[in-house]
Image (cartoon, each protein chain N blue to C red):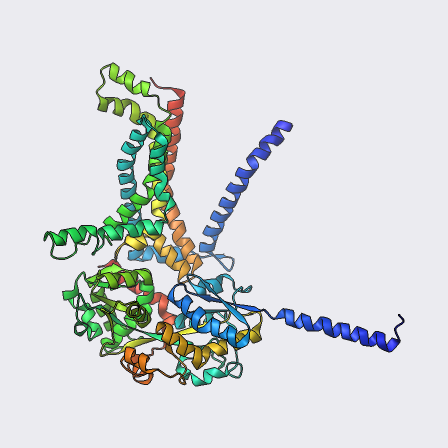
Length: 352
Length: 279
């Protein structure tokens, strides 16, 4: 077969185009890797976010359970293996400050427009370093076989010495960001003025029987009645209640509870950036967040998310009323001073 | 020539292993003092200026010493019993190492079931009316030492057992046939001969206790933080590797202050025993 010059050129162009197209496609992955804590969080991400996203977009998201997604991001800085990961807002702030996160414009993540700007993980130049899929809150969990919810209507009640040896507490790393903040509010201060809060925290520490290390241990302590009460996450109490442990109740004290936003972020230099942006935008949208709420009690950050009657009944209120009872501190300030706060708590505890 | 080559090849794996260990050690120390090419000891100064760190270091060494003592107290009789056992010794050895087949986390949590506020012991005490509220049997120093003894006892037993197995029973029998009381025979014959095993076991248990993380985390109380758990926090939560390296170096130096003399003692004793002198 003889080819004319035109046929040869057309063939060459066609071949080049064909080769370049798969080249573009092969740069796109058919699977995104999302780093998540294990247990209930991992299950929530698989059930409420990854599976619906795959059904909607055709792109699979594999949820990889790790002890600490932030540690993975830091260990793999410069050569990221995960496309995205979840962390606390403080972890997001710390990673962002260390320039370890990929940033996006609001046009790339339009669903974020439906999320209150105070929950945005935002760089000083206004770019988004992640999305906020949901939040939990930090209140006081009470085992009602051991104490009454009326016993813990204020954060100050945890420092009452009548609870000596009857309370549980988390480690200083979390005490510094969560407990101390709310104790400070109860003492008339805030996250920037913690002297009074530290006194109350010292009072609670004196009452503590167990310093716990894991959510599983905290669940067990509350469920078995090893402790009467402890500051705890709303989502864990929700999970206990769903599992039939209805005698553990969550109390929002009169001073309010701490709002705990979470963030999903991508490591700097992430591969498949466009697909990652689509996935992040999905995480910021209302539908999967509603799924997450029904599945595990994480409260949607997207203001378009609607609470069903069942959820309203379980929460005892709708999302708007709930948000009004929650305190949103300056997480940037908390993150910036976390290390010295932990040191202060360590030193306080060593004197007890 | 061939013999030299063979010796070199045989030594190569050990040399590589020791080399990697030394490089790691040098890098660990360097990362705690070298910043932008300058030597800076501020992490060490910070550690020494923190009273809670000094207390933590003391607690770590005290806990390690107590753990080693109780492991020796329980481990020696056990090793002796196994060494002198006339039946199938392998079954006993299997029982000793059996705990190693279970995760350290599970082993530590096992104590919660027994000694926790709603555990078996407290349940019994409250059921019988001997206590009106749960006693604090764990989440304190006692809990940490108990958990570490449970975890590390097999190391002590096996270290001592390996030496006891080499000691002929005839020596004890000869001592007793010459009128020696069993305790006298033990003190003057068996104990000196088994000292190398004791020192090996003590060194192993002491070193592992000083670096323990999981057990103090699970069974320790409010003020029972050990250096190992603090290093864990610096690495896993703050990602402050230089500070973690400084804490690790401090721990290494203080542990070596105890372990190195033990090593010299062990060598001296071994040499003395193998030389057969003095009579």
